[in-house]
Length: 176
Image (tube, rainbow, N blue to C red):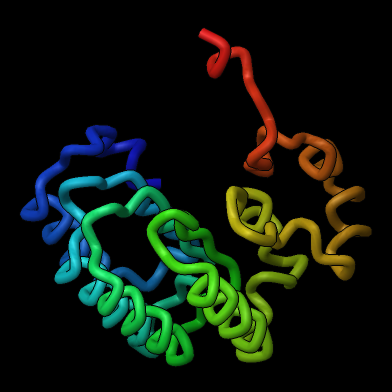
């Protein structure tokens, strides 16, 4: 989760560029939360990210790129089309930054990508899977994983709307 290290939504593009450069050589990362970079994530950065995701050595299958406001519709269209050549199976992008038709196309693509690998449903990868929340569909909800989720004590996540990132949830923090 990039915001753990760069929490300023006004982080400039040059910093996001360096982060993406570092990510290019990373073969460990499976889930990337690169949301809420209002100023730093622009067309060039989104396309750079897409190129990274399309690398055969890239293991990222879960992506949150929400709250990305300075990206043109044409770039989102390229990103949407390019997702076919990635391993992304679970994702979130803010609905107010992409069209509903684009969202449906992305969802169709990531569903089809689920046939490419099993990282999102492999019980041996449960430690990563349970951390992949705030997606349109969270992988922990996969039927095939339920016995393992219960066996390993993660069942509480299934009932925790805040942890899953449900939109209709108001937390105490939101009431302040």
